[in-house]
Image 1 (spheres, helix red, strand yellow):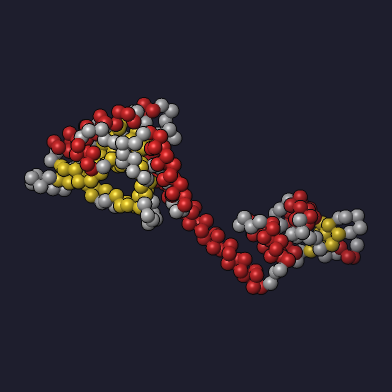
Image 2: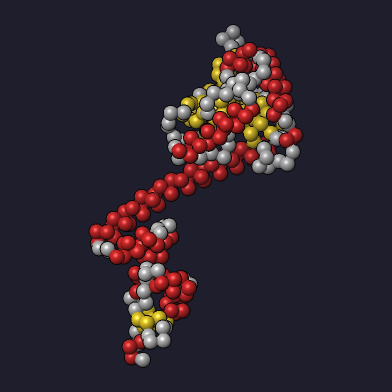
Amino acid sequence: MSRYKNLIKTAQFAKLCNVSKQTLIYYDKMEIFHPHYVDEKGYRYYSLSQCEAFMVIAMLRELDTSLKEIREYLENKSTYSFLELLDKKQKEVNKRMKELKEIAQMIEERKNMTKEGMTINNIEKIHIVNMPEEKIIISDYVRNYEEVEHEKAISNLEKYMRENNSKSFCIGAIVEKSELLAEQDYNVAYFYAKTNILCKNTVIKPEGLYAIAFHKGHYDTTYLTYKRLMKYIKLNDYVIVGNAYEEALMDTCTQKSEEEHLMKISIQVEKSKNDPLSGVLWG
């Protein structure tokens, strides 16, 4: 047994490297990682010095490196190819970290929206709030189109966002200023999603004052909330200077019935020049 003096069996090596025995056997069959010695009965033995080499393979697998890619590296390994492989994996990790950061921001945004919906105890109350500038990605123009075209526009928007590495849990809607001033049907002109990137379809939701109301119930009845908002804006000497933005705070993700859905509607306004008062008012 002198030849086995500094060798350990498969189960011991597996435990040492925190991997299953079956994985070591599989890697051997796949020409990825061989035991140091195999005796005449087929028992595999590993040396302690192999631990470091296995840890590199384990790290590469953690980074979603395919067995084919690992095998190709091992067949042609050198200092240069090792550094090249690590450089490639570092770039992939950095990209993934950026994606995970965006996903974390998405989750935080959705949590905040849901919490905001939970804190609304007076649906009828309207506020005037100073809101910051935001970048949004908009869909194709959909005003006066059928509902099937709306669904197509949302699908294309989500596809466009994926192509530009932008993510969002929430799709909102925009009603144009001209539609608001006409006080007619308040038809949606665009769908949108918040973003941190600049691309062809990125526009700016302006900083400024917004009249904010909350609509509870089926989407078909939002016109009633719009009428209430329009009345409030006029009575409090504000004028509409921008579009309306619709955001779902409570939707099918949290509510079983459409009657419990909660939407936030924000219309950009400013104080009338005929009104001597200035500043942010709360309704």
